[in-house]
Length: 140
Ligand SMILES: [Zn+2]
Ligand SMILES: [Zn+2]
Image 1 (tube, rainbow, N blue to C red):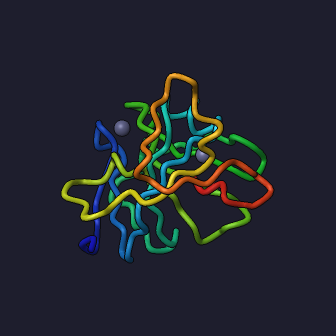
Image 2: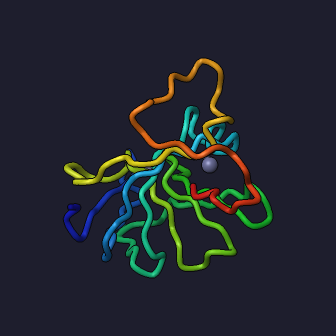
Image 3: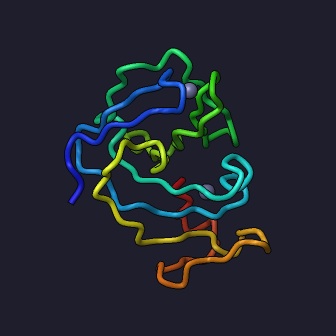
């Protein structure tokens, strides 16, 4: 069980946040946009956006991946921090590697595994869901 609030931030501390709600288990998203943004894949927890409080956000910027999907990153150190979609206004995906440890979280799902690059060795121990964007499982 994760402690509440979980806290986290980017490498330069320009972005610091706390999650004032139970954070979801970690999902690995292997979709091509997440692969290119992160350089590998996105491992993210998630919480209601309204429960994520910023103690620092001066360097937080949002990149429009599509007209409805944005990635949040630090403009100083380049960290990838967040994913959000306009059709899920109170959802925020938070990259698990930016959380302060211990997180108490587990990784329990991998999505869009068919979009992982060919060098990637997927973890057979993690339940996988194939890629079909029309299912609406693109969950950062
Ligand atoms: Zn930073
Ligand atoms: Zn993705």
